Image 1: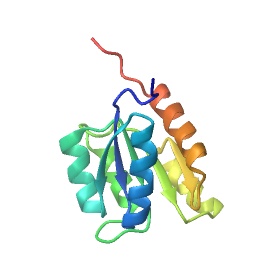
Image 2 (image 1 turned 90 degrees about the horizontal axis):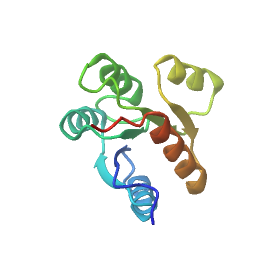
Image 3 (image 1 turned 135 degrees about the vertical axis):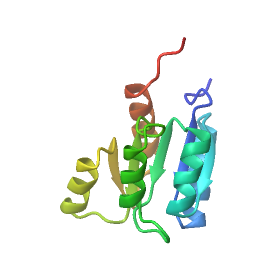
Image 4 (image 1 turned 90 degrees about the vertical axis):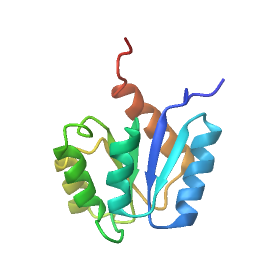
Length: 132
C-alpha cells in the first residue's frame, strides 16, 4: 500500500504550479495535502489543521518563510510540527539560518520529487507521535 498513511502535510508556496506538483506527488504516496499561498495563511492553516509536517517556501508575500517558522516555533500549539524549508535560496547562510530556526530539513529548488518524498518520510518517521 502507500507510505503516507494519510498524514496531513501543509504545502506553503506562493507559486500555484509548485503547490500542484507537490500535491500530486504527495497524494500519490497516500498523504493528505492542505495548501497555503502566503505566510499569514500558512500560520492560520497550521493552527487549525495541526498538520504532521509543513513544507514551507521562504520568499512569499505578507510573511516570509523565516517569519512563519519563527511564529510556528513560538506557539505551543504548533511548536512540535516539523517544518521543511523548500526554497530557491540555496546559499549556505540561508541553510544555516533555517537550521538555527529549528527546521527539520532544507531542500533547495529545483528539487527532485523522489528526494523530497524520501525527506518527507524521514522527517515524519523521526517526528512520529505515539498514538494512545
